[in-house]
Amino acid sequence: MMRFFRRSAVPYIAAGLSVLFLCVQIVNAQETESPELPDRFMIRGGYLFVFGAETDIQLNGQRGLGSTIDFNRTLGGATDYSGFRIDAAYRFNDRHSLGVSYYRVLRDGNRTISTDLNVRDTTFAAGANVNSSLNFDLWRLIYNYSFYRNDKVELGISPSLYMLRLRTNIAGDFTCSSNNTSTNCAGQSTSSGSATDNLTVPLPSLGGYLNYHITPKLLSQARFDWFYLKVGNAFEGSMFEFYAGLEYRLFTHFSLGASYDRLQANVDLHKATSSSGVAINNAWNTVFLYGALYF
Image 1: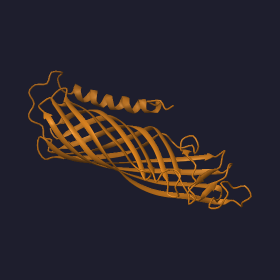
Image 2 (image 1 turned 120 degrees about the vertical axis):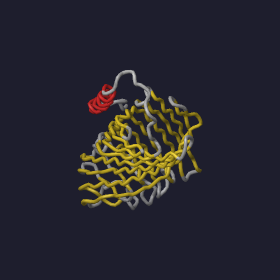
Image 3 (image 1 turned 60 degrees about the vertical axis):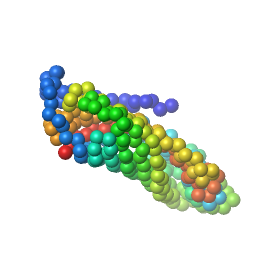
Image 4 (image 1 turned 180 degrees about the horizontal axis):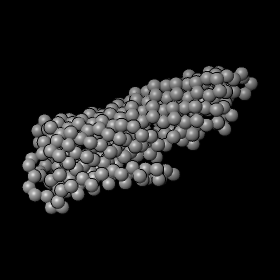
């Protein structure tokens, strides 16, 4: 079972909290009346650390056969990744705003497999040395409606649209074709081969958020997003995301922040028994350390 926090993430979480603590010490503990801070347009970007990533994937061939692959355990996939994330938002008025977000997660693996794996129409024989990669691109379009807002608190609902693109590549030195009556490489000649796949899935969601000003310059943020849809045997998908963070307005137009995010997404296209079936179960945690500009 995955631990909620991996040890490798502790230094990054501590660093983020330390940055915010130092920012708060720049001013007195009791802030005097502050001028109105701009928030019509926001753009932020920074360092993204992904940890505790887990992915199960199944890619069927023409006969509807495909092995369920645990990317971590079966293919030796990395569970950590560091990269960047960028977000932007525009507030039309006190009630309505629109936001966009993008980040990428790249995971690589290498392992000598102990059992045959069927991926699309390629079988990777037991004993093969397999190199693999999973590339996730995650875009998001967010609409925010604030039904309650004052100087301290903002509450709202937030329908949004996620676009998840997954590019898969698995290559091994002992492979054969599984596009026949055999489900393994017994009695067949083997050679180096690979299986690749590209998948883009839209995931609409409905969420809520809470922004609370601990002080006029120190902001705490929390939000959640949820989605579930089933359409016969053609599609079944679910998604849950939880976000919590702190942000300090260091200058009138500039903030520093840190956040924690947990994302889970499960997709089953055309069910696991069809020739075009794809099933993905994915989860990870992120720590985001960023700077933000406000206008």
